[in-house]
Image (cartoon, rainbow, N blue to C red; front, top):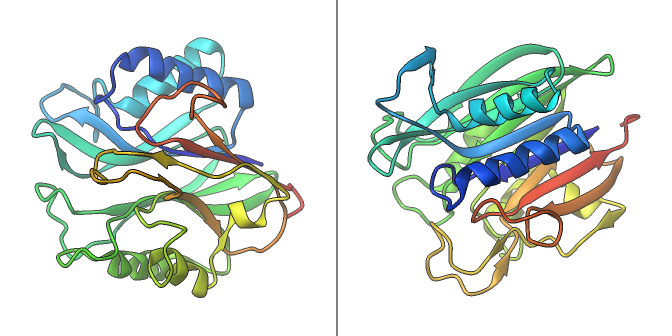
Length: 265
Protein backbone atom coordinates (compact mmCIF):
# COMPACT_ATOMS: atom_id res chain seq x y z
CA UNK A 1 0.00 0.00 0.00
CA UNK A 2 1.37 3.40 -1.03
CA UNK A 3 0.48 6.60 0.82
CA UNK A 4 1.31 10.26 0.18
CA UNK A 5 0.74 13.42 2.20
CA UNK A 6 1.61 17.03 1.38
CA UNK A 7 0.60 20.53 2.47
CA UNK A 8 -0.10 22.05 -0.96
CA UNK A 9 0.05 25.80 -0.14
CA UNK A 10 -2.49 25.89 -2.92
CA UNK A 11 -2.95 28.87 -5.22
CA UNK A 12 -0.13 30.68 -3.39
CA UNK A 13 2.67 29.19 -5.51
CA UNK A 14 4.45 30.65 -8.54
CA UNK A 15 3.89 28.52 -11.64
CA UNK A 16 0.95 26.93 -9.82
CA UNK A 17 -0.47 24.96 -12.78
CA UNK A 18 2.96 23.51 -13.60
CA UNK A 19 3.27 22.35 -9.98
CA UNK A 20 -0.21 20.83 -10.03
CA UNK A 21 0.79 18.92 -13.15
CA UNK A 22 3.90 17.65 -11.35
CA UNK A 23 1.75 16.41 -8.48
CA UNK A 24 -0.71 14.71 -10.85
CA UNK A 25 2.08 13.15 -12.89
CA UNK A 26 3.67 11.75 -9.72
CA UNK A 27 0.41 10.29 -8.42
CA UNK A 28 -0.22 8.74 -11.85
CA UNK A 29 3.31 7.34 -11.99
CA UNK A 30 3.33 5.88 -8.47
CA UNK A 31 -0.37 4.95 -8.24
CA UNK A 32 -0.69 5.87 -4.57
CA UNK A 33 -3.61 4.22 -2.82
CA UNK A 34 -4.43 7.24 -0.63
CA UNK A 35 -3.26 10.85 -0.86
CA UNK A 36 -3.87 13.32 2.00
CA UNK A 37 -3.67 17.02 1.08
CA UNK A 38 -3.69 20.08 3.33
CA UNK A 39 -4.15 23.79 2.52
CA UNK A 40 -6.47 22.82 -0.32
CA UNK A 41 -8.24 25.99 -1.40
CA UNK A 42 -10.99 27.32 -3.61
CA UNK A 43 -12.16 30.89 -4.23
CA UNK A 44 -15.09 31.81 -1.99
CA UNK A 45 -16.91 33.54 -4.85
CA UNK A 46 -16.29 30.82 -7.48
CA UNK A 47 -19.31 29.08 -9.07
CA UNK A 48 -20.44 25.90 -7.35
CA UNK A 49 -19.69 22.66 -9.23
CA UNK A 50 -21.34 20.33 -6.68
CA UNK A 51 -21.65 21.39 -3.06
CA UNK A 52 -19.26 22.05 -1.34
CA UNK A 53 -16.89 21.99 -4.34
CA UNK A 54 -16.47 25.15 -6.40
CA UNK A 55 -14.74 25.73 -9.71
CA UNK A 56 -10.98 25.89 -9.25
CA UNK A 57 -10.90 23.74 -6.13
CA UNK A 58 -7.26 22.64 -5.99
CA UNK A 59 -8.05 18.96 -5.36
CA UNK A 60 -10.63 18.96 -8.16
CA UNK A 61 -8.00 20.31 -10.56
CA UNK A 62 -5.50 17.63 -9.48
CA UNK A 63 -8.05 14.85 -10.04
CA UNK A 64 -9.04 16.35 -13.40
CA UNK A 65 -5.37 16.18 -14.44
CA UNK A 66 -5.20 12.56 -13.21
CA UNK A 67 -8.21 11.65 -15.35
CA UNK A 68 -6.57 13.29 -18.35
CA UNK A 69 -3.48 11.13 -17.74
CA UNK A 70 -5.67 8.00 -17.75
CA UNK A 71 -5.96 7.46 -13.97
CA UNK A 72 -9.72 7.76 -14.06
CA UNK A 73 -10.24 5.64 -10.94
CA UNK A 74 -9.22 8.47 -8.60
CA UNK A 75 -11.87 10.41 -6.69
CA UNK A 76 -11.54 13.08 -4.02
CA UNK A 77 -13.30 14.45 -0.98
CA UNK A 78 -12.78 17.94 0.45
CA UNK A 79 -14.10 20.08 3.29
CA UNK A 80 -13.44 23.66 4.37
CA UNK A 81 -11.66 24.45 7.63
CA UNK A 82 -11.41 28.25 7.47
CA UNK A 83 -10.97 31.31 5.28
CA UNK A 84 -7.46 32.19 4.14
CA UNK A 85 -5.89 35.15 2.36
CA UNK A 86 -9.28 36.94 2.51
CA UNK A 87 -10.73 35.30 -0.62
CA UNK A 88 -10.08 31.56 -0.26
CA UNK A 89 -11.95 28.77 1.47
CA UNK A 90 -9.08 26.61 2.74
CA UNK A 91 -9.57 23.00 3.68
CA UNK A 92 -8.20 19.51 3.49
CA UNK A 93 -8.73 16.67 1.04
CA UNK A 94 -8.33 12.95 0.54
CA UNK A 95 -7.79 11.42 -2.89
CA UNK A 96 -8.11 7.67 -3.41
CA UNK A 97 -8.64 5.08 -6.12
CA UNK A 98 -10.39 2.61 -3.78
CA UNK A 99 -13.99 2.16 -2.57
CA UNK A 100 -14.95 4.39 0.35
CA UNK A 101 -17.22 3.17 3.15
CA UNK A 102 -17.70 6.60 4.75
CA UNK A 103 -16.39 10.16 4.82
CA UNK A 104 -16.62 12.23 7.99
CA UNK A 105 -15.44 15.66 9.10
CA UNK A 106 -14.32 16.25 12.68
CA UNK A 107 -13.95 19.74 14.15
CA UNK A 108 -10.70 19.67 16.13
CA UNK A 109 -10.62 23.19 17.59
CA UNK A 110 -12.72 24.95 20.19
CA UNK A 111 -13.85 27.24 17.37
CA UNK A 112 -15.92 26.02 14.44
CA UNK A 113 -16.09 29.47 12.82
CA UNK A 114 -14.77 29.29 9.24
CA UNK A 115 -13.98 33.03 9.46
CA UNK A 116 -11.39 32.30 12.16
CA UNK A 117 -8.13 31.18 10.56
CA UNK A 118 -7.19 28.94 13.49
CA UNK A 119 -10.27 26.72 13.08
CA UNK A 120 -9.07 23.20 12.24
CA UNK A 121 -10.76 20.03 11.04
CA UNK A 122 -9.79 16.42 10.40
CA UNK A 123 -11.17 14.63 7.35
CA UNK A 124 -11.75 10.90 7.86
CA UNK A 125 -12.12 8.37 5.05
CA UNK A 126 -12.76 4.69 5.74
CA UNK A 127 -11.44 2.92 2.65
CA UNK A 128 -11.49 -0.68 1.44
CA UNK A 129 -8.06 -1.77 0.16
CA UNK A 130 -7.40 -5.40 -0.79
CA UNK A 131 -10.47 -6.61 1.14
CA UNK A 132 -9.47 -4.78 4.34
CA UNK A 133 -10.87 -1.54 5.75
CA UNK A 134 -8.51 1.22 6.88
CA UNK A 135 -9.27 4.63 8.38
CA UNK A 136 -7.31 7.57 7.00
CA UNK A 137 -7.34 11.08 8.47
CA UNK A 138 -6.05 14.12 6.61
CA UNK A 139 -4.94 16.61 9.29
CA UNK A 140 -3.64 20.17 9.47
CA UNK A 141 -3.08 21.06 13.12
CA UNK A 142 -2.04 24.19 14.98
CA UNK A 143 0.92 24.97 17.24
CA UNK A 144 1.73 23.50 20.62
CA UNK A 145 2.10 26.81 22.45
CA UNK A 146 -0.88 28.60 20.88
CA UNK A 147 -2.96 29.94 23.77
CA UNK A 148 -6.19 30.35 21.77
CA UNK A 149 -6.20 27.00 19.98
CA UNK A 150 -3.48 24.75 21.42
CA UNK A 151 -2.41 21.70 19.42
CA UNK A 152 -2.82 19.43 22.45
CA UNK A 153 -6.57 20.06 22.43
CA UNK A 154 -6.70 19.34 18.69
CA UNK A 155 -4.75 16.10 19.12
CA UNK A 156 -7.11 15.04 21.92
CA UNK A 157 -10.10 15.67 19.65
CA UNK A 158 -8.44 13.77 16.84
CA UNK A 159 -7.67 10.78 19.03
CA UNK A 160 -11.22 10.84 20.38
CA UNK A 161 -12.53 10.59 16.80
CA UNK A 162 -10.46 7.52 16.00
CA UNK A 163 -11.83 4.00 16.20
CA UNK A 164 -8.77 2.20 17.54
CA UNK A 165 -10.22 -1.18 16.53
CA UNK A 166 -9.41 -0.14 12.95
CA UNK A 167 -6.02 0.16 11.30
CA UNK A 168 -5.67 3.96 11.30
CA UNK A 169 -3.34 6.43 9.60
CA UNK A 170 -3.07 10.09 10.65
CA UNK A 171 -1.56 11.97 7.71
CA UNK A 172 -0.63 15.59 7.32
CA UNK A 173 0.94 18.80 8.54
CA UNK A 174 1.03 18.65 12.34
CA UNK A 175 2.98 21.92 12.88
CA UNK A 176 4.90 20.18 15.66
CA UNK A 177 8.56 19.23 15.30
CA UNK A 178 9.77 15.68 15.63
CA UNK A 179 12.96 17.13 17.14
CA UNK A 180 11.17 18.96 20.00
CA UNK A 181 10.81 16.99 23.20
CA UNK A 182 7.78 17.17 25.51
CA UNK A 183 5.60 18.77 22.83
CA UNK A 184 3.17 17.51 20.17
CA UNK A 185 5.31 14.78 18.64
CA UNK A 186 6.06 13.20 22.01
CA UNK A 187 2.43 13.62 23.07
CA UNK A 188 1.20 11.59 20.09
CA UNK A 189 3.84 8.89 20.36
CA UNK A 190 3.26 8.56 24.11
CA UNK A 191 -0.41 7.94 23.32
CA UNK A 192 0.29 4.92 21.16
CA UNK A 193 0.85 6.49 17.73
CA UNK A 194 3.79 5.19 15.73
CA UNK A 195 5.68 7.41 13.31
CA UNK A 196 5.99 5.52 10.01
CA UNK A 197 9.31 7.29 9.43
CA UNK A 198 10.71 5.70 12.60
CA UNK A 199 9.25 2.30 11.70
CA UNK A 200 10.48 2.32 8.10
CA UNK A 201 13.09 -0.22 7.04
CA UNK A 202 14.40 2.29 4.49
CA UNK A 203 14.29 6.07 4.90
CA UNK A 204 15.99 9.36 4.05
CA UNK A 205 16.82 12.30 6.34
CA UNK A 206 13.12 13.15 6.76
CA UNK A 207 13.17 16.97 6.41
CA UNK A 208 9.77 18.35 5.31
CA UNK A 209 10.36 22.07 5.92
CA UNK A 210 13.55 23.94 5.16
CA UNK A 211 13.90 27.55 6.26
CA UNK A 212 11.29 30.30 6.41
CA UNK A 213 7.73 29.36 5.41
CA UNK A 214 4.20 30.51 6.28
CA UNK A 215 3.58 29.81 9.97
CA UNK A 216 7.32 29.40 10.61
CA UNK A 217 8.49 32.86 9.57
CA UNK A 218 11.57 32.93 11.80
CA UNK A 219 12.67 29.39 11.02
CA UNK A 220 16.25 28.96 9.82
CA UNK A 221 16.65 25.20 10.22
CA UNK A 222 15.44 21.93 8.69
CA UNK A 223 12.41 20.48 10.43
CA UNK A 224 10.21 17.42 10.24
CA UNK A 225 6.62 18.55 10.88
CA UNK A 226 4.71 16.52 8.27
CA UNK A 227 3.98 12.93 9.25
CA UNK A 228 2.13 9.71 8.67
CA UNK A 229 1.31 8.16 12.04
CA UNK A 230 -0.31 4.76 12.52
CA UNK A 231 -1.68 2.71 15.39
CA UNK A 232 -0.03 -0.48 14.07
CA UNK A 233 3.63 -1.03 14.73
CA UNK A 234 4.87 -3.12 11.82
CA UNK A 235 5.15 -3.37 8.07
CA UNK A 236 6.57 -0.02 6.90
CA UNK A 237 8.92 -0.81 4.05
CA UNK A 238 9.86 2.74 2.97
CA UNK A 239 9.51 6.38 4.04
CA UNK A 240 10.77 9.10 1.72
CA UNK A 241 10.47 12.85 1.50
CA UNK A 242 9.18 13.87 -1.93
CA UNK A 243 8.82 17.15 -3.85
CA UNK A 244 11.99 18.44 -2.21
CA UNK A 245 14.03 19.19 -5.35
CA UNK A 246 15.87 15.87 -5.17
CA UNK A 247 12.98 13.42 -5.21
CA UNK A 248 10.74 15.31 -7.68
CA UNK A 249 10.52 19.07 -8.15
CA UNK A 250 9.42 21.37 -5.31
CA UNK A 251 5.68 22.14 -5.58
CA UNK A 252 4.94 23.80 -2.21
CA UNK A 253 6.58 25.46 0.80
CA UNK A 254 6.30 22.03 2.45
CA UNK A 255 7.80 18.84 1.09
CA UNK A 256 5.67 15.72 0.93
CA UNK A 257 6.01 12.33 2.62
CA UNK A 258 5.46 9.03 0.82
CA UNK A 259 5.43 5.63 2.54
CA UNK A 260 5.04 2.05 1.41
CA UNK A 261 3.21 -0.25 3.83
CA UNK A 262 3.55 -4.02 3.63
CA UNK A 263 0.22 -5.32 2.32
CA UNK A 264 0.22 -8.03 5.01
CA UNK A 265 0.13 -5.42 7.80
